[in-house]
Every structure is written in C-alpha cells, then in structure tokens.
Amino acid sequence: MAIYLLTFIVCLTISSFMVVALVLTRRTSRYRTDPEQLLSLIDSALACTLSENEWNAVIGYPIRHDPYLESLRRRCQAIMDNHGQPWLVERNGRLFSTQGMSELEAIRVHLNARLTLRRSNAT
Image 1: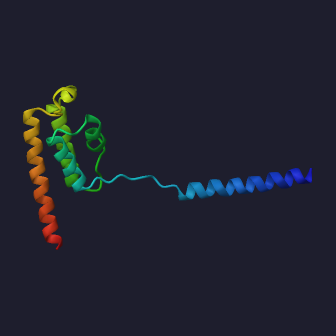
Image 2: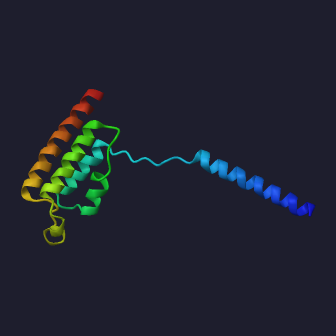
C-alpha cells in the first residue's frame, strides 16, 4: 500500500508540474500583416494569380496594430463585396471586375508610395 501511495504522489506531482509549465508558457499566436505582405497580395490580385482563399486569409483578418493598414484592409474588403467575382476565377482567372481591378490599382499605388516614403525617411 505504501508503494502505491508513493507512486501515486510522484505521478501526481510530475503531472501537476507539467500542467503548470504548459499553462505558464502558452502564448496566443499572433499574425501581424505588414505593408509588404498587403502590397504583395494586391500585386497577385492584379496579376490574376490569386485565389479567393488566399485573398480571404489576409483580408478577412483584422489588422489591429496599424490603423492605416486596417483602413486599407476594409477598403479591399469593400472592393471584394462590391466588385468581386469569385465564381469566375476558374474560368478567366480574375477575382475582380474591371472596376474592382482599377480600384485595387489605386490602392496599390497609394500603398507603394507610402512604403517608398517610409523607406526614404528611414535612411
């Protein structure tokens, strides 16, 4: 009976330490979209090499660390809502209508200009 209690206490102690260690070291994973990723996504959409899933993976996730990027993400989401044609991707490879592509091009030019300005100010 003594060996049983000793084994039970040792196992309980080890299990308790493992649970405490896992709880204390666990962190929530964070995904941070940076401007270069957003620019690359828009470039892929304009080149008609983007799937609807890739688009939704980035645009469907809120950007909380940068209000400017969040506003661009919302504009891109509105473009998808208004000008998206995901049912035609398999046939002609375009995720957006012509008007949607022109709006995406305007967002791309604006984001690229902002990135260029930021890089020139950093040096």
